[in-house]
Image (cartoon, rainbow, N blue to C red; front, side, top):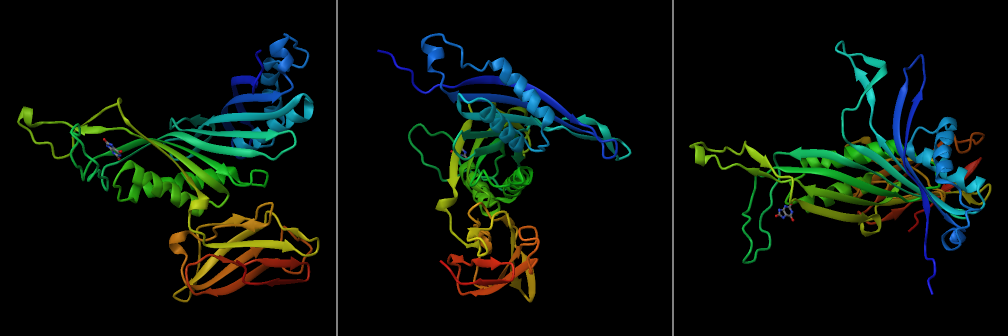
Length: 395
Ligand SMILES: O=c1[nH]c(=O)c2[nH]c(=O)[nH]c2[nH]1
């Protein structure tokens, strides 16, 4: 007997261009490619050829255009969330939906007199941004976002030495090779149902990866990949995991002695294939914990979600803002508020910006100052109502 296992279907490659018109600030231009997949009560369509519950994939394509025309979403993640919700809310036979959106970067053209042209755009990079947003009918969103084809190269601080050797090893140590790769990064949001500024997170992740790539004293692709992922996890608290793929696009020095010339490490031959291929997933749970907090709203006995939190350290008599800024999640928590390399014994303060959470409260913001004796994990919560607050050293 044959039985139908997991199945899903949908539309792939729905291409959408969206122009948002603004006579004052100039237009915006988005190019998205969308894939919609649904699962649910569809076994009879496979077994009996019964199409009565089958939402045509052609209708799914139309739904993409319809939701695109109505949405106020700026980010691909928020658009994908709306599309998932629309499909689940309008079709009772759907048990779960997932939407993938890929976005190509078009930016305003800058003309030769250095002004941003309001209605002309250029695609200056091959880089693609993407997201996959999923939700079961009775469950929470999960969101994995990323970018691919981010081409980078470094010509210094890159070696590969002291590697394992056997009888077939011909590679020699190199202390001054080139390191070129096309980065693919995929990260998972910890609490995808909370309000997240997805574009800001993507920007922080992208620039964090590139900062590390530039300055890292690389012993290998593996070594730099890990440093990039760790740095990003420490600075972007809304993500719980990052997966990086970094092919090693070899550039081999050309032997110029055949032509009576010396190669001063300047002339290389790029090799497409074969190439090295390095992948690794780094999870937050395997990392050192630093400072965490949570806010409990005592007026209703519930966690206070989406409250902006920042941390400062007293260094040489001045308060220095830490690079990690966070909003509390739906459990009222904010984790890893300080990057591990900055977490040390000293005087610290957490500033909770509660004005928007409690607009009629007495305190627009609360600052909690405390001293740490070491770089162990500290948990400093805030218990809050409209007219009072308290705190304690938690664990
Ligand atoms: O950074 C590298 N990692 C490797 O695993 C490897 N293997 C190799 O031949 N060259 C390199 N380079």
